[in-house]
Image (tube, rainbow, N blue to C red; front, side):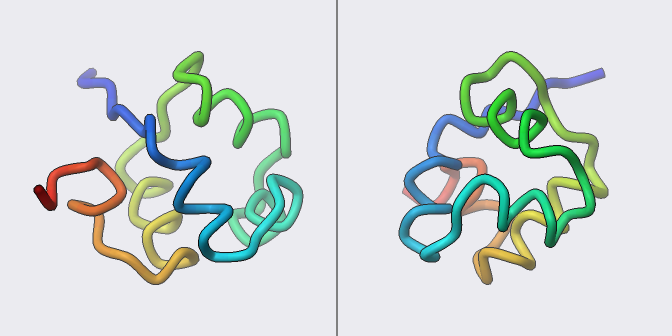
Length: 68
C-alpha cells in the first residue's frame, strides 16, 4: 500500500485553528493517531485522507503538498 506523506499536516491543522484532539474528534480517531500522521510514523488510508482534507477545508492535493 502506498504511504501518503502528510509532512505539512501539523502546519495545516494549526492554520485551521485545531488542536490534535479536535482534529481527532472530528475524524473519530485517537489523538495519538493524528500525532503519528504528523510525524510520519503512520499513514492514513484514502478514506481518512479525504476526511482530513474535508475537516481542514482544503483539497487532498494541498494536504499531500501537491499544489506547488
